[in-house]
Image 1 (cartoon, one colour):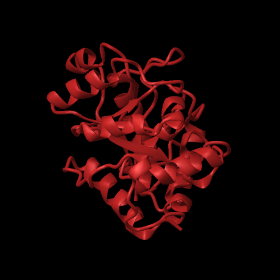
Image 2 (image 1 turned 120 degrees about the horizontal axis):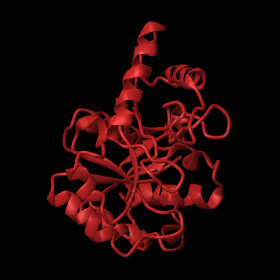
Image 3 (image 1 turned 180 degrees about the vertical axis):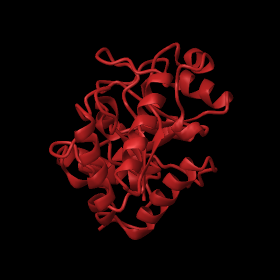
Length: 251
């Protein structure tokens, strides 16, 4: 199993404070059946600033420690990039990371809304061969208020990833219900942990996959593998929440 979004690197953002905490999180991931983790520290969001070279160096160091400990786990490079006007310019300047060098990039919306330039930025990324994956849309205030705001972005070619803890209900009933709606309306394509630690923001992928129909779970797991190897994601047409169709059903 692959985790596409995890704050596993030590002392870069609000993830593990040191190598010891990172290694404990690696061990917990292994217990959850995860064999590959994409390290996705925040790029910059007012508190942190992690560009490509710094992340790649941290990934190399963590992998060396994992190998030394004899743990069967691989850490891949990635980045959680808060959307901003110069995103594409900085990507062209080699400052930003896609997932494991693929054509997929994790893009974060501000928690309180969707910037006016979002549609244009996501479109421009695709024109340049990058498929944006919108992370945790179920926790965005504007999408929570009107889930169909996500529809147009997905219809225009973006993908999205929901958080395991959202399905578990750890962020509340409203976010859990929205997550289920997004799954049923084909508005999301991945589940990832977005783990930060072993207490308040843990892995939780096994529980999340076990909470949904096996057809969806298999689809999400396969998509994670496809992204990591740079393949092409197979998508069902998205639906407006008010007109969603139910294909597999949820438990």
